[in-house]
Image 1: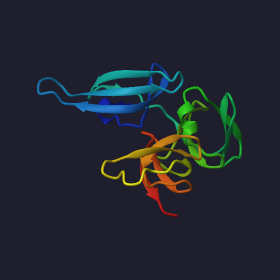
Image 2: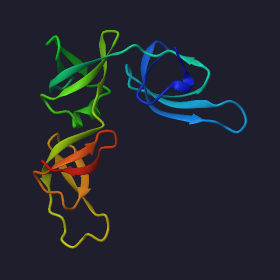
Image 3: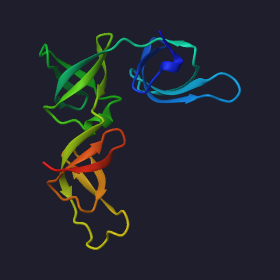
Image 4: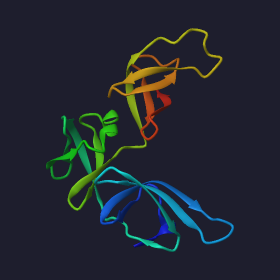
Length: 187
């Protein structure tokens, strides 16, 4: 059990006997009355979001989860296929609730898979990842007065808006939470 005031973004909580990921957390200390925490929680079983308001001294049960480094093998129409890097055991994670993750995962790369009650419930991606631009149109010459952007396609198929100077074949860093361009990466 932890105090609601100690809840942080990215934690796993057990609410109504189901694991929830804290997607957003806001601490509110009004001038009158006691402080409280507003949380946006994602149910890792059903994928539904839930908004909870808790007083800071209230107790909340933290979900006991394990994280395993696993190699992403491939995805089919129903699931992602992973291999545990330690035991070499293969297992599947259903696509439902994790469709967005496919836009960032590359076959053969290692990701952290969160396990609860011997079931995979989440795939943790790094906050920022580097990709190669596979398709980019030419920027309009002289159009540099404003912060102009153009759409490019990265190797996973995700389309991202980038500055006009980015060309096909270059490597760029993407924020996996916002799906936004961060910077160009020199090899």
